[in-house]
Picture 1 (cartoon, rainbow, N blue to C red):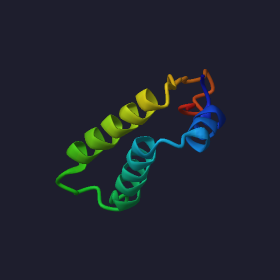
Picture 2: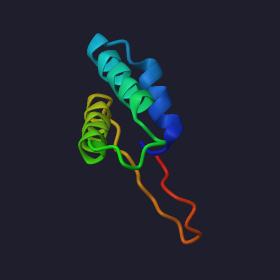
Picture 3: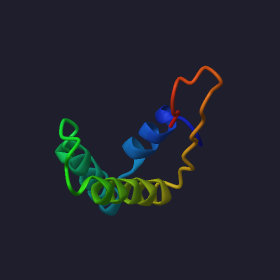
Picture 4: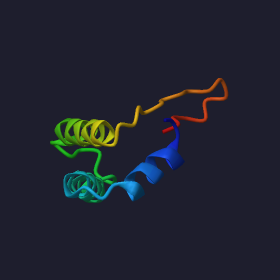
Length: 78
């Protein structure tokens, strides 16, 4: 599975409470992340935690994230 729609569908279909707890935790980490503070002293630590939580969610949902960078440089595709 690849793409953000597949990820969303997998999350919506997930009724397991563990999956929902991991999702809620990831969303909370993203919402609390200080985007406007480039001098934030725990920047790398928090990014590593977010990355790890994302990988955990992908594993629980049996979703393989697909990070593609196109020739146009439009960015990442989840």
